[in-house]
Image (cartoon, rainbow, N blue to C red; front, side, top):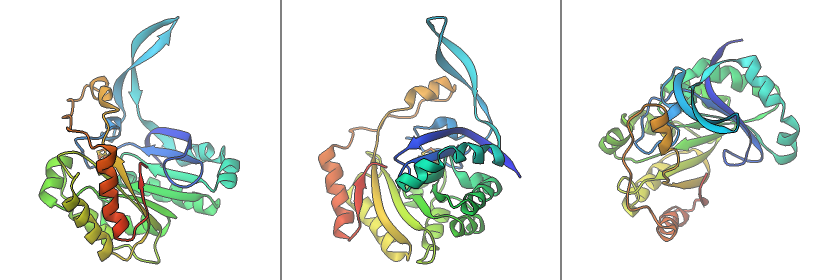
Length: 266
Ligand code: SF4
């Protein structure tokens, strides 16, 4: 069995796919989105972080590490604790990050072990990976949570650090024989919070044969900004004005009109 670097395993999640889920957070992401609220996920290696802890009744800042090596057996042991919840709720395990495909061998092994154990799997991906790795992953996964941010390549590069060619070509490679897909779109003011951007994404969805179950629009929020300081990273910009619930409803209407089931949030 192999292993890899994770920065968290969270139980009882209800936002990362159907039912009650265990979410496994892979460390390392090839993107560097200016709105990322999990900045500890970006660097592939374990890194120092300052955390506020209660020590002898007082709050104190202590130096800790975020991320560590896990074996596949240890991850499966964690996942196995909640089999009853998965069965009763129709849940399973979600591999998230960071970008799980950055550690392809580790991800594929965990997906295969889950499939052998009859556990439903979801992979939360940016789609930025080699065509080969993406294809192998999709063949072993029940559900993809696929993030699409913008169809504009230059803008994608300016706001995330990478272009979107790989992402869009991997998305277009999905077909009716592959996993179910939930498309997730972070709605970021001043980046993609317009009708035109959403209409362009609808065109991409329509051009693919993926089994799209739903589209989730994720409103921008500023949670996680304090983590940048705790990690010694530069603070990202604040995107303003924040999109109102009414504007979010209007943007959701673009996908509803195109025939998709739409939800606000993950
Ligand atoms: S793809 Fe996700 S995890 Fe990676 S930098 Fe962007 S928001 Fe953060």
